[in-house]
Image 1 (cartoon, rainbow, N blue to C red):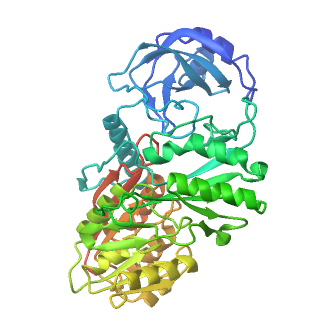
Image 2: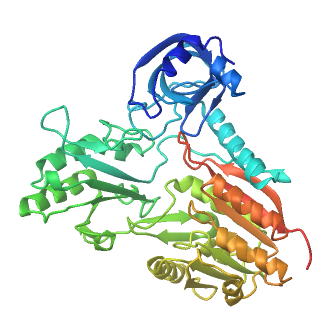
Amino acid sequence: MVLSGKSISKVSHRMRRGAKPVNIEVTEPVIVEALDLDAQGIARLSPNEQDQAIGQSGKVIFIKGALPTELVTYTITSDKARFSKAKVRDILKPAVFRAEPKCAAFGVCGGCTMQHLDIRAQVAMKQRVLEDDLQHIAKVKPEEILRPMGGPTWEYRQRARLSVVNRSIKKGTVLIGFHEGKSGYVADMLACEILPKHVSDLLPEMRKLVMDLSIVDRMPQIEIAIGEPEEPHSEDPIKALPVTALVFRNLLPLTASDEDLLRSFADQHQVWIWLQPKGIETIAPFYPETGKLCYRLPEFEIEMPFKPADFTQVNHMMNRALVSRAIRLLEVKETDRVLDLFCGLGNFTLPLARKANQVLGIEGLETLTTRAKENALYNGLAHKVSFIQSDLFTVTAETIASWSQAERWLMDPPREGAIEICRALADLYIQKSDLLPQRIVYVSCNPKTLARDVEILCHQAGYTLSSAGIVNMFPHTSHVESMAVFDRSKIL
């Protein structure tokens, strides 16, 4: 719905397609109809005579900072033939679900773009995204919508990669933080509300540290990885603290003075410093020389050691809930053999081994396969778990046959999804093979590739989408984590 679009239509039609950024203030208000996954409000102008003549609707305006149902004016920042980008100017009628952003860097930092939206509305929006993608891409509706899973909404992020830039309008300082929205610039931030407070408090201290180093111009990044306390219930306050590792990307060797500064920083702030002089394979502890990063899954009596560069979920509390629900939905029996595809370090594999007879974890990277085997041994599960390396993006029916039959599968692919696996299952369905698992639990970090794979599994491989729902793993961001359960709908 649009109150008036005449003045802006005149302006926009004078602009050429692909025109340079503009700065046009529009005082005639519009009502925002929807929100995209970049947290931009979507409004549509009334069609002008030219649009009406060719049967097209009015121009779409994407308005940064505006929410659905709001009445706003805006400033156009980029204008093209069929749509414009804008930022909100005045909110004449705010939405009932508008929230006050907690972070001082909101609107500048490119992360947490949904802080102005109430957390319940964020969850509802993500659930709607999942359901819409399943409906429009897969042409499938789940038999059951799972209740959305949520957890801590602040101080939840246990790992992060911060950029370091020795350029600032404030002479004599560096910027350490996340990038600005869709920009190569680094946000000027002294705190981050989604990082644990003890890490957020380190941001200004890390600025001072880097400024004092001889290689201030050759340290582009600091990676943060936080593990659980070495002894959570210890009377020793140090052992009861989370283990915080900082990986400094040093493109030049450190001087003796630099090393002294890093050691002093580590002692003062109780952090574990690692260095990365070249590629990821060069990451190694600097000071102290030894230590342990880990996260725990108490329900399954699992302790998972990891290294700062290993892939782990950034939200440890939600990961516990995710693993618990996935294994519960898989309905594993003591006699079952289970496959865990894209197994990584064994995040699902080792808990599954507590429930199943045997578990095979399959991973594409040799380094992760090695680390998963170490974690199985560490947790006393090597007799129930085996791991193999396999390229899961080139899977065929013959590949699945080499894995042997398993009653239940768990898949947790990256954003690209698992299309080749799903196609191979479709081929096995045509062959009336008994290699098809009875149940699949699919954990997804991209609802669009999930929906694409759902279409194959449900329309070509004989599966029913029994249930699906979201996991709010990344509050205040547009990231949609979800889970889907598939059951064999036909007996071959």
